Length: 208
Ligand code: HEM
Image (tube, rainbow, N blue to C red; front, side, top):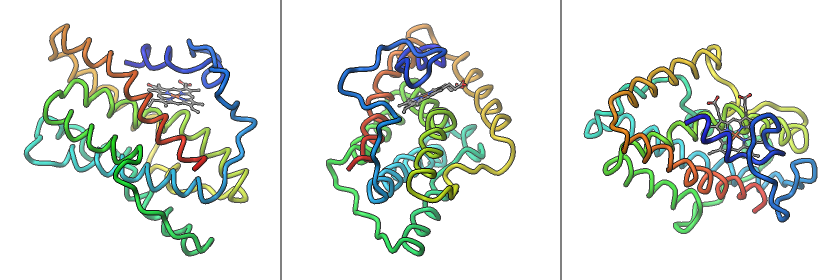
């Protein structure tokens, strides 16, 4: 899964492993002009995505995902605190999530895949949590410098050593995939493009 994901990065995003040319219309990160409102929107949208993931893995009817509960990578509680922080310190109210927004559409897709296509769901699970630990943190650092006077939000803080949390989840993902047929493994890998598409759309709310 990692190999496929890295090839879908642009060379600007991940210079060592990125396989795609940066599209002409994509703004280099150095030229981003985000606003605090846009950043808050991105956090609100991200919270819906993480809440959906975390509801799915704790849903008793979907016991196949129970190994992915309490991984320490969960982000919805941290995001809730961050959104409250924006209200307290910046006086900014979170915007409601429109039903046709990127996160609402992604949440619907995740719920459907979790029930109907576990290998595809697992691909989104991996990409969401691992992308946040890599590119997500790079975005967070940039936003913190540009908009928040260096404040590090809870979204970018984990209890315990992040690399250890990630490796424990990586091992569980590998064990899960060992039980799949070749076709199921291919479904999972082929889903990576969709994970990039939806996460990319959520990321673009930074500029909304
Ligand atoms: C890994 C940057 C967007 C999924 C990485 C790495 C970098 C990076 C530098 C390599 C980390 C390392 O191993 O040292 C970025 C930047 C992004 C971005 C700058 C956008 C501005 C995305 C998106 C997804 C994604 C949209 C998919 C939803 C991943 C995954 C890994 C990764 C799955 C591998 C993590 C692992 O297994 O160790 N990213 N990324 N990234 N990224 Fe991104």
